[in-house]
Image (cartoon, rainbow, N blue to C red):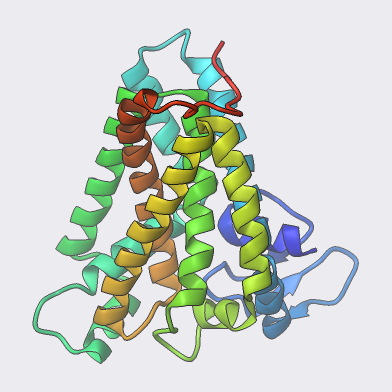
Length: 279
């Protein structure tokens, strides 16, 4: 059940567990042939399922790889890249992108924390949010166009969702209500340890011992820096902040992967344990 809770929380992929009114407001959860699950139990399942977040990223990555294999022999890399970015938005239901938009909208200068949180709750999209979303999508498109490989398509969904689990535990909640607070309340370090082992294994197998390890370490530092900025602005992290960190983590993973693949071949053993997915 925990795995399905993680899959439902991070994607729109159908599962035996689904919320009645959306991920952002899980008042109850409908399970076939059973009574609805109360909101607190649903939040507990998601929080306890953070160990599966990298696994959900792996599933997303496999879907993107299958899409790549179907398209790369038909269309040029630029077209394939934009279709993959679009597919990623669809698979996640644009929930993470919506969180990024709200988080960026709250960065309006001269506002108090309370005012920023109120702006984030506003359904209208502001200039800051629109700019942030466009920049993130452009970075993903440019990075994929420059270095599109099956290994990269699996790496960046896995590591970005793993990095989110660390930010959940490190930073305080911005609010004492909402899905973000409820999930954080039930997340724990044992789940994070399992998620880290899974993410590290996948990163090393796809990128080599040195590159995979350095990549995951650098990503954690940079995502935590982003989390620190959000925490300073909003007094902690909210559900919108979690979505924003997934988007930021994806873009950072792509950029770091390209950079490290330029640098690491000069280091002996960088490709140790690497699995080549190229055809």
